Length: 327
Image (cartoon, rainbow, N blue to C red; front, side):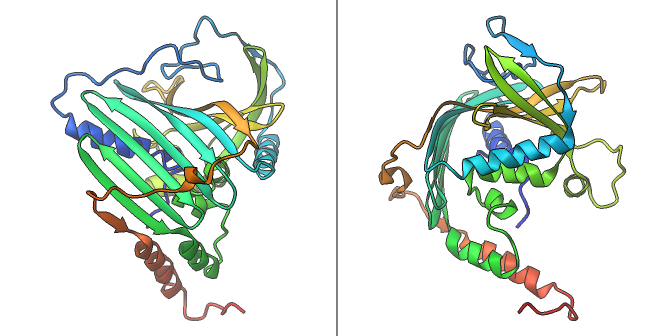
C-alpha cells in the first residue's frame, strides 16, 4: 500500500485518478469541458492564474518565515479539534496542460472519524461522481464513471488498531491515506510532506487571510523521484512543485488549498489543483443519517480491509532481527 501524495487529497477527492479514468473513456473526444465561470472562491487566483476583476485583493508586506508558517498550521489543526461538526461546499479546480475541469460537492465532518464527502465532475461527454461515507467504523467509497459503478469498503478501526501496534499515529499520514480526519487529515498530510518557506497576509474582498507557502520536503521528493534523485531534478509533470494554504484569519480555518506547477520556462507558477471550501457552518447539528450508507444491490462490493492489514504485517516482518521488541 503506497502512501498517497497529499495533493491527491486526504479527503479522498482522487482528482488525478478521476481525471485519468474519465479521459480514458473519452480518448476520442476533441475537447474537454472547461470549468463553469462565475464561481466565487476565497483567494486571489483562478485556475488559470488570472485575478477576477470583481474581486479585490490587498497584499500586505508583512512576510514571515517558514517557522512562523508551521506554527500557524499547527494552530489551525488545533482549532479544528474544537468543532463538533463542520459543513461546507467544496469546489476543486484542476488544470493540467490544456485540460481543465471543475468538481463541486459537499463536505460534512462529525466527531470520531465520521465524514461524508460527495462531488460531481463532468469531463467531455462523461459524468463522474464520488461518494465517501464513514460512520466512524467503516468507510464506504461509491464511485460512478459514466454507467460503471464501483463500491469498496474498509474497516477503519481494525486498520487503525493494526497501525497503532506498529507505532503509527492516528492523526497523521495514516488518516490522510485512509481518507479519514477530513480537513484535519489533509492539514496533517501537508505538514508531514511540505517544507514551508514563508507566510504573509492578504485581504480578499475585505476578509483577512493568512497564507503559508512551501515546497515538498526531501522525504516526499524521494517518494516522487526516488532516493538518489538530485536536489534540482524537476518533478514529474503530474506533480505540483509548490503548495499554498489560505487560512481565514479570524478563525484560522483553511479555506483554500492550492497546488502550483512551474511553467515550462521556469519563470512563474500556475495553479494546478485548487480546493476551496465555502458556505461553511461550524458546530451545527448534523443528522446521523449523513454518515450512513447502503450499497446499491446491483453493484458488487469489495472489502479492501485485508490489503491494509497485510501492509502492516509486511512492515512487521521487514524489521531487522536485532530490532528491540516493544514492551
